[in-house]
Amino acid sequence: MTVMDINEIMKVLPHRYPFIMIDRVIELEDGKRAVAIKNVTINEPFFQGHFPSLPIMPGVLICEAIAQTGVIMALRSAGSEGKIVYFAGIDNVRFRRPVVPGDQLRFEVETIWVRGNLGKMHGKALVDGELACEGDFTFSLVDHGAGGAKIHPTAVVHPSAELAKGVEIGAYTIIGPEVQIGQGTKIGPYCNINRWTTIGKDNVINQGVSIAAPPQDIKYKGEKGQVIIGDKNLIREFVTIHLPSGENNATIIGNENFIMVHAHIPHNCKIGNQVVVGGYVGLAGYAEIDDQAIIGGLAGIHQFVRIGRLAMVGAQSKVLKDIPPFMIVDGNPSQVRGVNSIGLQRRGVSNEATAEIKKAFKLIYESGNTTAKAAEEIKKRLRPLPEIDLLVNFLEEESKRGISKKTAIEAEADELIIPEIPELGI
Image (cartoon, helix red, strand yellow):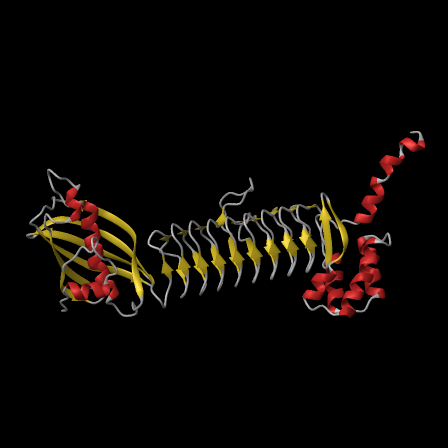
């Protein structure tokens, strides 16, 4: 048996005045059983308000003292180094007699079961051998401190959530059940990370972000899906990322993306790697954005639209049809403006490939070819470089929205028709 005085207790418990509720541990079998005592005096701060004329120790604090005794037992078990214990549930609690100043409480706890990081214990509080309180307490062991997760005291983390080392959780953030967060990810204050979310390593998620809320889809009936977020993403304030619609589907965000304030990533969307999504961008369901694309602020993307690699969408654009890789679009509704030459250069695409992409642009947009015909002509006439293969594959893939064949030059020509009508005498 081990005996612990208050100094030894404070080396194990993270609690401090006025919330440390036990004075001495008189019996201890690591991970199995513990007995502690508390001397109740009128100097306890809670007696100032509970109740001044009839001081009675609050029942919730008796439960807290039982739990702290269980924490001592759990944290002295093998494999608990660097851990902190959270309440996960309280069952079958009954209060048998009041506790008043002058009483000495004896707390006895025994382990019922432990499975992984979850456990359950039975505890009771006695005064002079008379039962004052008893109940069952479920607890969770999670990483804590410099080598583990850093969780703000006001944050709420579900016991089934898995937080890797170096994770930081900000004030008033809620981490729901069945959430996994990878090493080094930092989550700011007032975030909601709901169930069925997996987040990778070294992400920075700023305040007010909502992840895995139910989709805005009237067909959704609560079926299980996933939100999967990769590594090294920067997600700014008040971004919303929704669960998918449909059983076992996923909303997916890759690696190294920059998603700016108030952007909306709805159900079943797929975002690749190194994508920039501007502030207040609104994607619709099932939209897909390939690697290194840039979506300007306040743009709206129709459902099922595909945006190819290194495409660029101008601010405030309304995108109704697919945007092939390497193209620039702008306007409401958006029209093709040309090849994203500067973006290609910045991403290290060769001059040779850029020249071939510009030839492909003419075959798609200036030749009068259908999309299928344009793809055939590109394969016949242009060199089989990786960028050209990517473009052809995009054109040949099934599309629910189709590809806009109208360029900005054609739109300007259409606009000239109206002023000419009076001159024709119509």
